[in-house]
Amino acid sequence: MNDILPVDTPYWQYLERTVERVLGSYGYGEIRLPVVEQTELFKRSIGEVTDIVEKEMYSFDDRNGESLTLRPEGTAGCVRAAIQQGLLGVPQRLWYAGPMFRYERPQKGRQRQFHQIGVEAFGVATPDMDAELILVSARLWRQLGVEDSVELQLNSIGSPAARQAYRSALVAYLEQHREALDEDSQRRLDTNPLRILDSKNPDTQALLNGAPELVAYLDDESREDFDRLCALLDAAGISYVINPRLVRGLDYYNKTVFEWVTQRLGAQGTVCAGGRYDGLVAQLGGKATPGVGFAMGMERLVLLLQEIGAAGAVAATVDVYVISAGDDAQRAALAATEQLRLQMPELNIIQHTGGGSIKSQLKKADKSGARVALIWGEDEVAAGTVTIKPLREQGGVRQAQQSLPVQQIQAALRAALVSETE
Ligand code: ATP
Ligand code: MG
Image 1 (tube, helix red, strand yellow):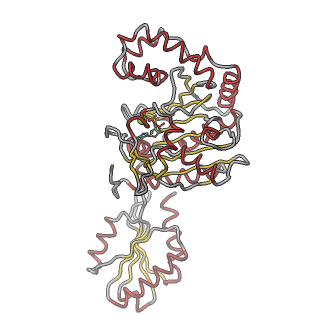
Image 2 (cartoon, rainbow, N blue to C red):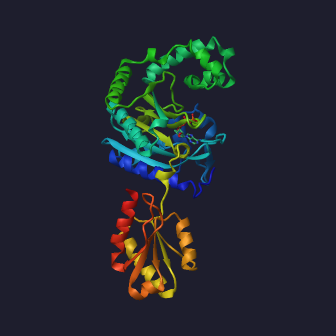
C-alpha cells in the first residue's frame, strides 16, 4: 500500500479534475460509498470462484462477529446503495472514485491499495447505453491527452444461457488437452473455465487456437445488440478491436465487455475495464434492473500521464510571487495580496515569508517558477505604488519592470499574464 507524494499528486489532481468535468458534461452524478461492506455482498456479486473472492479480499470479523471486507471493487457497493436508497426507479447515471483493496503481488501498476474511478448506468437495457459509456471513456482519454496511447478491445459474452452452453463446449475441448495446460488453467478448468481464455501462457494460448469460439454460441439478442453497439461506435468515429477471447474476471457480466489497453505500461496495460451486468441488481435482491459500467485504474492512468510527459498540462504553476522589505511594506503587501486573491481567484499567488533582502527574495521568486514578481519596498509604500517585474522572457525579450499605483495592479497583471500565455 503506497504513499502518494507531493511530486505525484498534481497528476492525481489533474486526473480527478478532468474526470469530474467530463462525467458532469454527460450528466453523471457522483455517489460516495463506504470502503467497508459485508463480505457476503462481494461473494454474491463478484462470484465465489473468481480470483478476487478466492484469494484477494481483505476480510475480517468485526466485534459482533460479522464478516466485513475492504471493498475490492466498487460496482457491488454501488448496486447495494442503489437498491437500499431507492435510486432504481428511473435511469441513473452514477460515478465514484476511491481506494480499493486486493491482496495481490505488488508490482508496477498493481498495488494492494489502489484507486478506481467507477461509472455505472442503471435502468437501460439497449446498447446505446453501452455506447454512451464507451464514448464517456473515449472523451476522457482525449481530455487527458492519452487518446493515442490506448486501444479499445470489445467483445460480447452473451446471455448466461449462451455462456453456459459455450462453457460446456470449451471444457469438453480442453479436457482432451488437460495435460498440456499450465497449473493455473487446470485448476480453472474445474472452477472458472472461461478465465482460461485470458491466460498469459503462450502454450495455453496456442492450444486455444483450436478451441470452440464464444461468438459461435451467442444468442440472437446478444448478437444483435453487439452489432448495434458496433454501428453506434462506428458512427461516433470510435475505433475498436474485437477480441473474441476477452472475458472479464468477475462473474456478473453479460453481453458487452470491453477494455482499454495501453502498450506503454508493460504487463499491467489495462487502464479501464467494464461491461454490462443485467442480472446483478436482481441477484443482490433488487427489482430486476439492467446495468452497465466500467472502472478505471487511477495508478495506471497516472503512470501513463507520466510516461507520455504530461507535466506541462498537469503542473500547478505559480503566477505571482509577492515580495516586500520592511514592516510597513510587509503589511501593505499582505493587505494588497489578500485583496488580489479576492479579485483574481484564478491566480496562484505565493506571498514570500521569512524575510530577507529584496535580492534574496527575488531569487526565491525566480526559483518558484512564478511569471511575475510584485515588489513593495519602502519607497513604494510611501508613494502608494507597487513594482511589477516580469520574471520570464516572452518572444525572446523580458519586459522591463514598472512602478504603478496600487489600484492598477489588477489591470497590469492581467496584461502581463495574458500576453505571456499567448
Ligand atoms: P487484472 O487482470 O489486471 O488483475 P482485473 O480484471 O482484476 O485486472 P478489474 O477488476 O476489472 O481488474 O479492475 C478495473 C481496473 O482497475 C483494471 O483494469 C486496472 O486498471 C485497475 N486495477 C485492478 N486491480 C488493480 C491493482 N491491484 N492495482 C492497480 N490497479 C488495479
Ligand atoms: Mg485482478
